[in-house]
Length: 234
Image 1 (cartoon, rainbow, N blue to C red):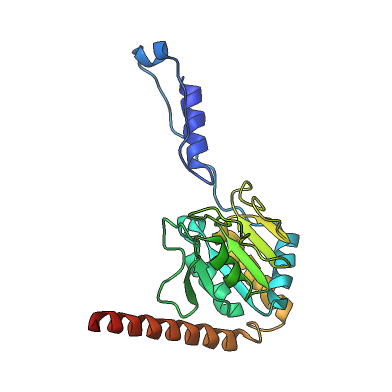
Image 2: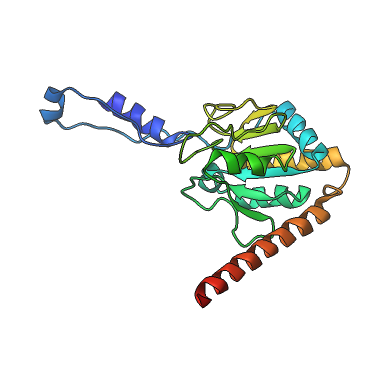
């Protein structure tokens, strides 16, 4: 019993963390006995992605003209918000959070924040068609509220995927580069690789991209305010 409980605790505490089902026969459940369960094993979480894969991802990010970053719960769970903000600002890419999120994986007040991913196939596809690279960090591609006949992923869109859980990498869609690594440990390496790939302290188009994202967000807020005022005046 101590061994299987220890194994269950170790599995629950290791990445990607989560519940573990432990099935015991009824006679064991009904029995009483003093047990020394000891302390659980905690696996060090700082897994840095493969350097060659990070270099390939950096080359794609440096070359992309319209990149989009999608932040999943693993970013917040791994305390990697600052690292993701650094990368987003470096390349000037808009950042969306995954559609069904249980955490805040990117600052909602940041100028590059572009909202959360839709939860239906058609709007996801329409959104992604405006981009030439999708970089998913610690999230699921994609969680839908309802099934439909529209594939959310448009053809030809390059996908880069970073996750600490190998199950998530390329789970639903092939990835041009799949990096097994913890976001907090890997994102700084990726940012440095992007700097080397661009030969500058940031992507040459980063400033223009930031301005475009901020303008689009301001226009969206203005439209929402207009609708709210119109609704209130009815």
